[in-house]
Figure 1 (cartoon, rainbow, N blue to C red):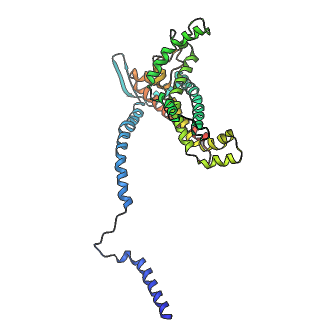
Figure 2 (cartoon, rainbow, N blue to C red):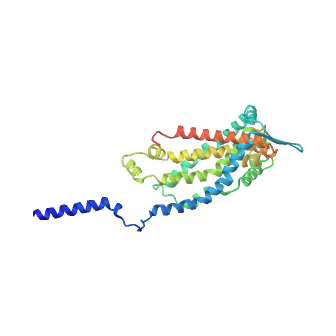
Figure 3 (cartoon, rainbow, N blue to C red):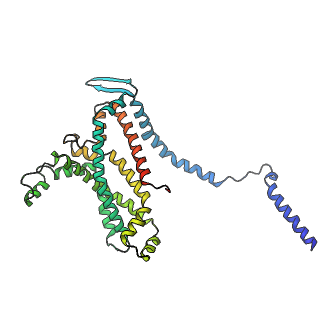
Length: 331
């Protein structure tokens, strides 16, 4: 018995000693196996090369060039080219002290809010309907396709369509006069709020389908057992939506709000075509990008660069504020 125990102890010592001494007792000339993770990582870097090249060429270099040009006086006066002359922050002082910038910023935000609020409400309602298994809606695929179709239509086509519909001699005025609501054509394009409402309405129609798809994806990712448990406890549909769906949908809502805010600040195509680039009446529908386009069209690259950098900073600040005020501490 004693000999068996001593034999087992010797075997344990040999195993332990071999485990600790194995790296030091490897024979020279025997290569160690390379980690598969390292060999796989190189393919990840290789696949990233096209993205990095596109980003550097089409985003990073233009952004650096824009910041660089914002510190120079560079514009054309008639046939005479002025600059480029280094002026420091004078271009930034000019756009900030100019009274047009706050006005155009306010106009842009007003039209974005008017389009975003109905857009998010309609998208939440449709997403809740399509993802509710108890409703058993038929032809869901057809309706999802239909609500997403406006997102595929070009903004120029949308703007020209609405311009034709709401012109003084357009079909909308003809229908309203036949129904007896008005006695003479209403000049939609000559009133501030009618133009703003139409621009906001067009943006809402174009983007609510995309927002609905995003919210549906978020709702379908919620564990169905949570809804079943709430129904067993006697919760109503409204209580389930506001106390379970919305809190768990907060990350998607924050993403939608930030991306919509960025898109709103970059609003250009719809008001540019709808108002023929004038922003009338009284430039009440002139957006920041339309204002920037006027500087670039007149070859004033210094002020255009300063305005671009200003918009970049404002967009970053507003996006950060939206994220802070809409996200909880746990997130």
